[in-house]
Image (cartoon, rainbow, N blue to C red; front, side, top):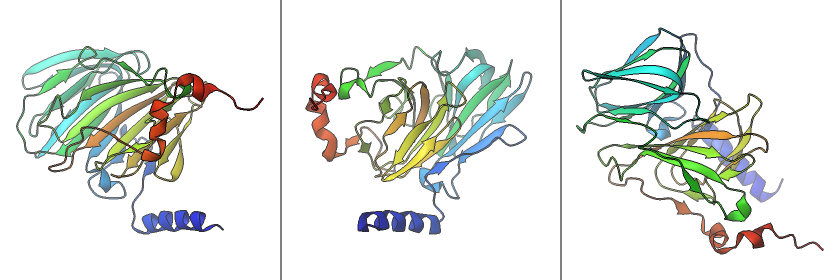
Length: 286
């Protein structure tokens, strides 16, 4: 075994001994809850509590925790959201067809969710005592924007939205957004990192869809319902297999006194920004 491979294995084994993990394939429990990350346990480096819920028609849930802000993101279906004496029915055919609806509230505010049909929601929480106004954000508040078209040989084309971040919600300890990969394309490219931890939740447009998730030097097979828990400082590009569209919900936890505001490109790949698409597509074999 080479020294490099031995070092990789040693690092992975050290992480396993410490009880930390960076990728998961959670299942829904009988009550329709799927736990991604918690404040304790193998994914505690995320500093967030993230869960996904399946709800049937007529089913209701409530969410409120003291000392924690909460964001409820509709992944699909039709639900009625209620908070602070207000209510709004919102719908989303799927993450591949329509933009997001997300209710974001401070600690101590109760959110009620009632499903009008089969629905799926993601709930992101972080500890935060700050008081701020609750906000319901819709597709018009988080429009999809093209990323990287015409760059990297057109192999990292994707649509990205930002539901809220430090620029729009400086009172929050969280960032929430979504990515839609073009089929067979990369995202999170070029490889980049940042000190703040980030979680990715993956969905594919077909049940057999898959991709590759890079966390530092380790690679994992991404499938629908899987997630990556990326520690601060680790590069994390993602790839989607040809023939499939990949959705990623991306969630970052600000650090105290060090909020996330930008990505830090791996300098080894910075040259790609200046390379033309034509040059990157060229084949040097004659």
